[in-house]
Length: 337
Image (cartoon, rainbow, N blue to C red; front, side, top):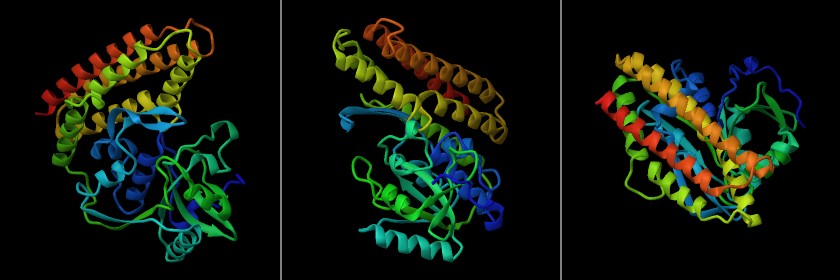
């Protein structure tokens, strides 16, 4: 069922479309509870959500997990300290227990965040459904058997039948949500602190320049080495390259999208910190995001047979991206130090 839900203004909540589910959900929750400056970009930046990881020991459909952000819930939990906030996180043994608790919270007027599986949400178009268990959304009410949902990747709020939502909340597999729900118990700081912004930027720099072979720019180089070893004629090579594209452009906002959001955060940080040089850094990161899109386009053309499959070429492009990001984050550290 994908009917448009009742106007959210009736529930005292305003739906906002966002580029990414978790940053969209947590920024909406914060604004609803009196933090007007919490844009989606500020939520990503202040939580130090930007990252890169190549995790060959975690598989999605038999292929390695490649992430352009910190793990699920990191953006939510990353805002707790800078905003002096307390959130309640709850998981459940059964769908019945999860539904009863959700209904009770809604009856008490709570706006509730959920972690779900994209595959089992029927309001997603069929061609957008895949087995990904870390999709976040907000529930703001219930009418009959339908939950009223603010899903930040959609332009308008939607409805979802209780059986469908239960299936999405209790999907099995990697990152199984186990009915996870969360909501704020207190948000004591209503304004974003400049010191917290600077601290968050330096944390992101450390993550991206970490001396770990599967994280940050070193993780990009490790992945490039793996790609370079692929045999062009092996059918599994096309599957691997297609997986690269999906992880970058379809799951969450991917490589380019997160860079664009973080670039917007740097514009906000420039004003908060009184450092206009961050505006130039924002422009540089936007250009890096454009390069990620070009990388994905090159890979997609190989998958679709419009260009010859050339793993070595993709590996070279990825190494170039790693060098750009290494230089960028070193300069970003200097800009805020």
